[in-house]
Each structure stands twice: as structure tokens, then as C-alpha cells.
Image (cartoon, rainbow, N blue to C red; front, side, top):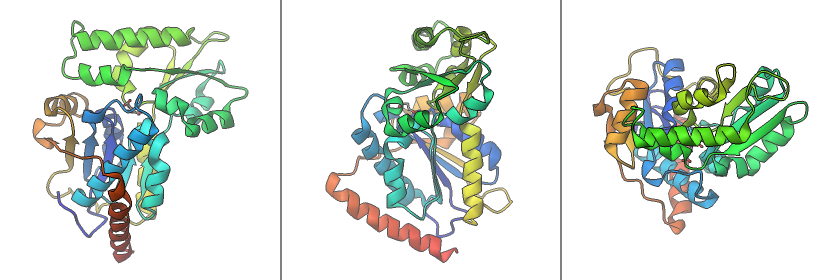
Length: 313
Ligand code: DGL
């Protein structure tokens, strides 16, 4: 794929700290079958959740810059709750003409699902400590109580466990142990009075640990994740911008998957979670922009993108 001047045939950029955002990409592909996608897993810099806002914001900026400059993306989906909380406002300010979608823990959908009035939320430390999450929670808490649990290490363990799904694999055992520890901190789960009947998966990696989580919560608890609402929102924004791809099979590659980390890990994830062959995957280097270079690079790209958008209005 190369940069293009036509937003409607340009790819949609999707990124996450690692392979977690593939859960969002899966929903995007189902909702937008005529679109091309370029997905970037920043696995060399994962996990984001325990690194602090400045680090996550710098990585988000570098990746947005890379996807715009190298692939001419027509929209960006930040398929990472932690990066959305730390940096989406900055990306929006820098690229006002770029259709931009972030993800946040699905507290609102959980409100309408819970019968017991107790909702569990698992997410990274960064997401739960963010002002964005604090404001969302405060705006909704009342009749429904949210019990939150940061899950240090879980996203990373899920990354490591991708290549080998066997129960005996140490990374898979670690996923199981972490799920047990963090759900035990939230318990009791169930449909009885005072029990958590709805669990919000506030990190895009966690749905890939669904089995391990389910073993801890029991069958009656509902899991809420964000792939489908994000895909619907992306579709709405593209429609509003008149930038949906034409209804025809896209030319060339429909999905390109990139990683800053280990290529075999992304290839295993692509195969396991999306049924995509290894040849869709490649390794890339995306250096963090030097602080002086930020504003120059971003204003140049903003101007380019606005010009592209204007051409197609
Ligand atoms: N998948 C990411 C999220 O949704 C973050 C995982 C991490 O890198 O800590 O928050």
C-alpha cells in the first residue's frame, strides 16, 4: 500500500500497543468489508498500561505520524483504551480533519445490561487512573456501582501466550493465574444480590483471555467489550465524510499487519484470531519523534491531510 490522494480508497489505520487491537480489527472488517486496513501493533513498546501518559502519548504521536506519512490513511482507529485515555485529545487537535475513533471501557452499555447493579471493570492501570475514565465513571455511577481492578501484567501475558495455546505453556498458565488473581479481587460474581453480573473488558487484549476469565466468573456473567460499537462509529464517521470505500473488492492487499516487535508473534496472532496468513504481516521500525520534531512534523502532516480532505470534498 502506498500513500494515495483518494481518501475513499485509502486504508483505515488501526493501532494498539500490541495484538489486543486485533479484536477491534476483527469487528471493523466485519462491519466494513470493502475497506482496506493497515494495523500497527507497537509490541516493542508494550505494555502501555504501566508506562505513564507521557510515554504513551509520544508513542501514539509517532504511530499516527507513521501511518499518515507512509500509508496515507483516511481514518485512524486507536484500538487501545490506554492510548485513547492518554492521547486522543492531542491527536484530535493535531489532525482536525482526520476521522478519529478511540475506545473506552464500555460502562454505558454495561449499565443497561446489569440486573444486580454491580458491574466489574478490568483495564490497565493507565486507563483506570486517567481523568477520562474518572469522568466517565462519575457521570454514570449512582444506582449502579462499578468495581474496578487494574490488571498489571495481563496484556503482556496475553501477548506472550498467543504463539502457544496449550494449557501447559508457561505464558498461558500465567494468563490463567493473573485472571484468577484479578477476578478474585472483584468477586463475588453471579446473578444474586450484591454480585457482579456484568464484567467490562476495558482493555482490547482481554477478550483473547475470554476462556480463562470465564473459568473464574462462571457462565452467568456477561462480558462487555468494544469492538462492535467502535466499528459502527467508524462507519458513521466515514459515511459522514463521504469517505466509505466503493462497493467492490479492494485492489491489492485488504489487510496489512505491522509490528514493531517480534514478527512471529504477530503472525501467530493473525492466524489464530483473524485467520490471516503470515504473508500479511511485516516488521517495522517506528521511532519516537524527537520532541523538537513533533510540532514541525505534525503541522506538515496536518496541512497535507487537510489538503487531501479538501480535494475530495
Ligand atoms: N490493549 C491496550 C488497551 O486497550 C493496552 C494494553 C497494554 O499495552 O497495557 O488498553
